Length: 387
Ligand SMILES: [Zn+2]
Image 1 (cartoon, rainbow, N blue to C red):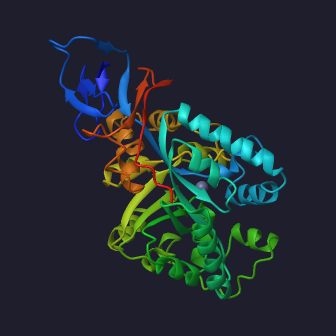
Image 2: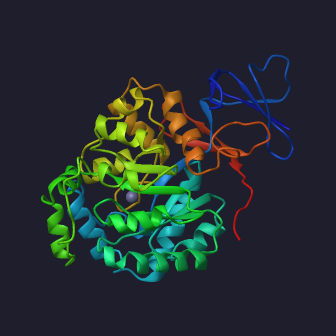
């Protein structure tokens, strides 16, 4: 048995408790949460804040080799051009070594689950071997509607070859996936959890509104025929959200999301999670989403690091600190909820991770009071999920 206390205990499924005590049984599972240590023996007294392991709701571990390879603040079009040009110019050995290092970094940063994008199978074995729980999003791209069926066949084949029990097939972004492909994805059976890059740039909305702007440069460079595309949508989100019904959807970035978009998402009947990747937004566009608006509107917010191609580290604490610097009025308990409870719900792991729930092993992080560093006090353990 272990009894641990610190300045504040953040159970996440109940209010923070000053000097609260976390009791673990001999198997390391949470046995009780006590309001104080009165009368208890052998209590580990720690300085700082205790919270469950972090959930990184958006990452691309297979892009880790692009760390420090791309210039900052170029805007999304040049960023995408840079990734596509450089991602395959490394040896497989380098790609795997970087992904393995990234996985280890996330463990050290107290991350216990990741919603991770895969465009290929390169990182699958690393994810299978890791103590981190991964939900893999097999991401597809294809703006030519005639190719939609073929793209899905290939993605289903990749998903079958990966032999993961927690994965789904998802669209990359509204500007890279035709309406036809969006609808084919939405119609897939057993494909409940969707992730999509949403409104990461102003150019994205402009393109979906009138087929002009910076994105036309991208299609020209990649020789993609857009003559079939009929613009005229109110926004990028408006172009696809109604293709999906009653699905769990993680909208990633939302830097240029409007209140009208949010209302549309709400009315779509989908279970919407807004995934914020603050450091990646600063890296690529030097602009943050209107997080205070999302918060005030009661949005279900999750946090992600995005990949090392657009971030300096894979640290949820760094994401929290960036948001705190821009929005100091948001209470820490709420930011932690985005980094734990909400992410676990998004990834379908709410019964095992994201809160100090009795009987669970969600991982325990001790953050210093200045939130500059953390220590993993106990590892997480989930029902292993690979087939
Ligand atoms: Zn991403």
